[in-house]
Length: 68
Image (cartoon, rainbow, N blue to C red; front, top):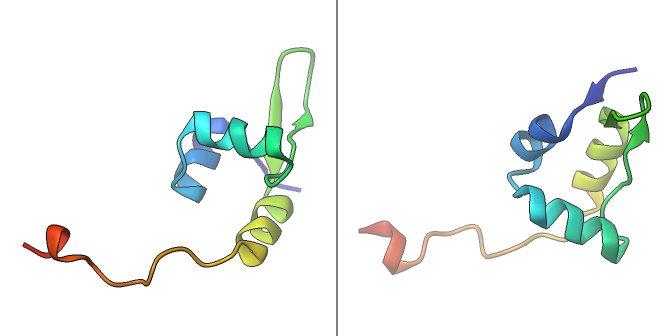
């Protein structure tokens, strides 16, 4: 089983650390598993499942503000 620490989760999701923790509080992001007394990580399976079930955001096209 492969584990992702918080910095890896940030890279995988494109979300900030505060956003990840907020989504966890809201119950819409997987909780980490405890690896040790002071270490937690997310499983790749949980992250992939979250990504697949996440509703699409935006239209997928750039706005005029970003296309310049």
